Amino acid sequence: MTRLWDKGNPLDEHILKFTAGEDHHLDKRLVPYDIRGSVAHVRMLAKQGLVKKEDCKLICTGLEALGLEHQQGEWSIGLEDEDVHTALESRLIDRIGPAGGRAHLGRSRNDQVLTAIRLYLKDALGFLAEGAANVAYALDRLAHRQGEIQLPGYSHMQPAMPSSVGLWASGWATEFRDDEEGLTSAVRRADINPLGSAAGYGPAGLELDRDVTRDELGFSRNHEPVTAVQISRGKAEATVVFEISLLLGDLGRLASDLLLFYTKEFGFVSLSEKITTGSSIMPQKRNPDVFELVRSAPAVGMGALMEVSSITKSLGSGYQRDLQRLKAPLFRSIDLAEDTALIMSHALEGVQFQADRIVLGEELLAAERASQLALKKGIPFREAYRTIAAELNGKLET
Image (tube, rainbow, N blue to C red; front, side, top):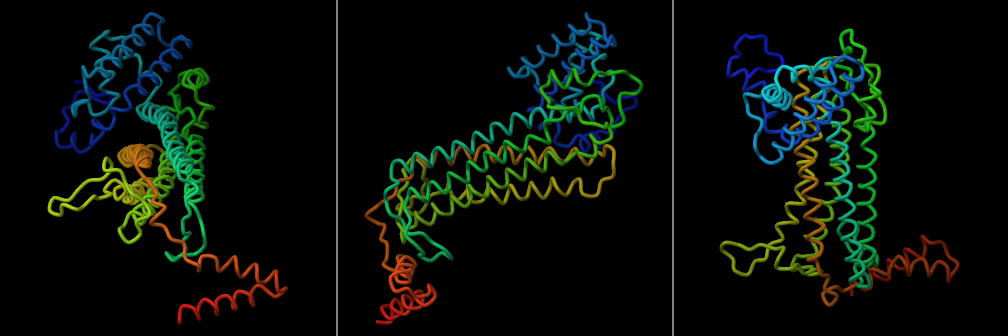
């Protein structure tokens, strides 16, 4: 095993374990994206006459075969590989010979990994936006099934004004569609081609055509000047995790509503037995664990946002190894958001509002009565407000 930076000197195994960190686990999801970036780069090198066409064909065919084998579980990235880049290049050289070592001409791991991450983020944001939309659709279906049922509207956790299941569900659906839009717009910082910037100062005297890799990889533009590429590190990641934290926040707040409505004291909703669990000691319990876990998800998302935002806070220009630590919170938050949105859209199908348990008190009409009194009597609203308040207080005292 020869790592990309290896000059023939042995590396202390403790140093390897620490510096590789979690990359050999985390980079599993980057394999297809690293291959796409490498194929585009090598084709560009061939077009520029920097790599022979026959070598280009060997490299591209070999990388695609390695990608398929990885997908089928025939090989995995190990600690000795350090990361996806060494894992692929070393296996490529084993497969096709010295030509495999030509793929890295004019490239650094710095622009290589950023290319893979940005390609991955573009796909991940699409999946996350779809997840937010699916929660909105599930709420639409709930409103369609039971939208006419009256529901108290609350402020400060106190009964406020009349509402309905339809109004409640449509309000949440609107915000999940807003989350969908936010996640879709977050692609802007990921949709920039870093290939050709190498270690942040260009490809060391080579004439590369960055437009070729931009177009093949589907980026909207090249990241220029090359020094901006490494300075930008963490911004796309923070943007994505910020939008994820907003989605998780909405999911958590929706879960809080449902948990309150499911209490015996409220009893506004029943939950299908298929989506509740039980107690190991209390036979009567049907626990809404799924919504409790959804409610806690925003805390994990905010933790990831703090990590991502803090890692780059004090860095100067140019690549720093600190940036490696961006992957774990980024990937963790993406996985959490995808799983949480999926389970919420699924669990909402098991929510049933119980009209016979929902009672709207007379006080919910107080604001409407005050407005009508002001219009009918031609008096200021504040006077009408106090009149209705006094009337209600008198009834309460009685």
